[in-house]
Amino acid sequence: MIPQWYRTLDIQGRGTFWTAFAGFVLNALAIQLYPLLLPTIAAVWRLDAFEAGAIASITLIASTAGGWIAGALSDRWGRVRVLQATILLFAAATLMCAVSRDAVQLTIARALQGAAFGGEWAVGIVLVAEAAAPAMRGRMVGAAQSAWAVGWALAAGGAFAVVSFHDPVSSWRAAFSLAAVLALGVLLLRHRFPAPPAAKHDEPPAIWRDLFARRHAYATFRGALLAIGLHSGYWALATWLPTLLRFGAATDPGEAGRRLAVLIGGSFLGYFGGSWLSDHLGRRKALLGFAVTAALFVPVYFAVPHAKALAVVLGLPLGFLATGMFSASGPVLAELYPTALRGSGQGFCYNLGRGVAGVATGFIGAGVVKIGLAPMLTVFVTGAYGLVALAALLLHETRGRSLAGDGS
Image (tube, rainbow, N blue to C red; front, side):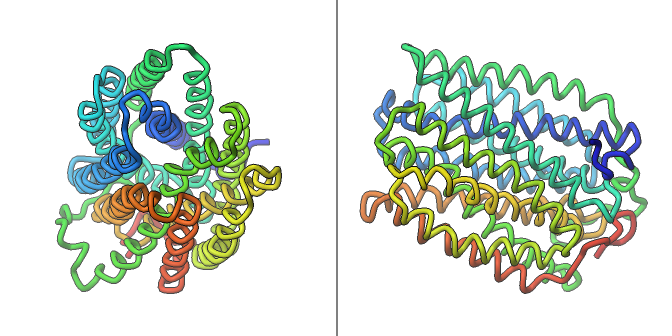
């Protein structure tokens, strides 16, 4: 059955959706390969937990700069032109990951990859929001964001294949190379579709400091607080949970992979559940409900020994809650700003959150030695979702707001 939001789109709108979806799939595939292969790469290059976490952190920190720059440039030079540039950079950086010979080279490659990833996501999600009808924006943005779960699943399958081979180093290099080639295919596809009408405006280009002017400062504060909580909770789980499942479960890689598959399945459902709730209940209620439930659920999840079968089942709601919040937040960040400032505003807030999460992810690696991975994740992720709940309380309801006009 074809969803109603999809039936309302013209050819241009559908092209915008599918090119964004394909790009997000490849973003997730390439970005998530590292944390999934972290035990293998750490063993090959003899990295300790802090060094391994630092490589993950630099990717997220660099994505902050990439998102800020690409978002601001998209307001001045156009969404499609900037999006194409970020896709090209992402393909080149992913290929650099494939040919890296040591941890330093991989760190540089992952930094460039993060910058491109941050820029592509910031511009791509704005394009999707601008192509959607106001009443169905949450569902369309959520469907586009579900591409992350698809790419995560592909990365998990690729990681399982890598550790199954006798030469895992050559295998993970091949996985990154394939992702780079596929990214070039997305670039060719994106070239066929122009920007949606809502992305075009006759207003003079906004300047970056307008985000902090009296008219928009409070919106920027709320959006940034929301993004910091979302990303800090998600990236702590996405970076370190595969390692916990692999070693905490004391099982073979195949069993850990099956447990991760349940988590990813819950994540995929969460994107659709969160988007549906944000359109029907409103952005604030959906975000608050997800955040409070997740903050209460995370300690329960980590209290269950990961050698128990119950831990597998609990992965489904954990994944659902973690990504359901993202579906509700995507439309909110687009709806906070007028067209002339939307790329800059959403790019700043979303990627500031990811950058803070990157720094925090590195500190988790350092804290593991002192208190252990499960307790560290419990405290950190619960606190992060508390920030999401606070941001939801501060937000004004934006459901149904038109993006063709001022939008502020």
